[in-house]
Length: 183
Image (cartoon, rainbow, N blue to C red):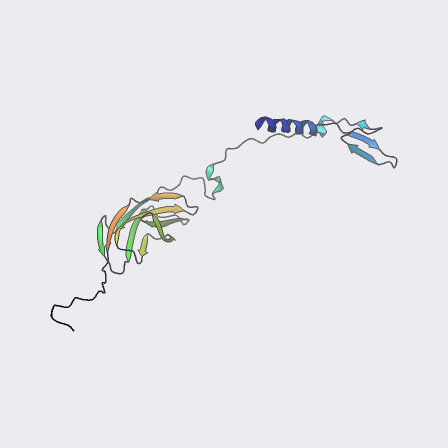
């Protein structure tokens, strides 16, 4: 495949450097062609009329160049969950859980926080480190909070925090009647 491509590029180069012929027709109009015509003459070009292309110096392009961020060193964030505590048992029948984090240094305006519960993003990204989650199912859950840039690049992540949520179960089964009573 490379050999074929090289052949076509060379053929194109030779074709582009072909001779130019000039002739004047019976009406006095001057014509130019790349093929010799009867009574035509080959045109000689001076060296200063030929295109001289000088390649520009090659510059290394950073992978971050497509981002609209400055090339300054990125901020190193530290994120940790403050509440609830590790392996804390929460008794909340409505399933509402508030997760609070501490981040340092403060977030830049174009950076956001997201919360993951059991490796799934919960809600939308936000700038405040307090997440109010509603109607969480009972059981064991693991939370992680991540700092991310607008383009989705992860900047920092908290260690996972495991909690246990207890919710009362309403059982509407009929109560048994004692023996000998009832209809």
